[in-house]
Image (spheres, rainbow, N blue to C red):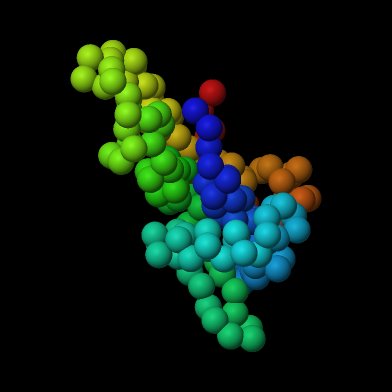
Length: 155
């Protein structure tokens, strides 16, 4: 399974906002440390805001911040939001599916089961677990005292 660039950027944006949750942050601030263009960020930020993960404020003193506490942001939900449109394999595509084996293929069932397990694992991971007591991340993205992880990252 390969994660799309937008999903990767979305999690980076959430981590940046989580580490700097005491203030509004800007696209320009996020771009460098998260290695993302402002154009990509604009698209991802818009979707994160529409999905209720972040709040945005326009204007000269505008920016973005988390819309929920880091412990309430489940990484599985973020992945589903950004990955749901990308079929895992050709046989999962509604359009352009030319696989002649689709009606008899057991691999499709195995991939479906694996995807469910993947998302179930990510449902046990919160943004708080990714940022809390993560000093190397704070050194890269900023530094804000942590409230404590609500759920540890599963092994």
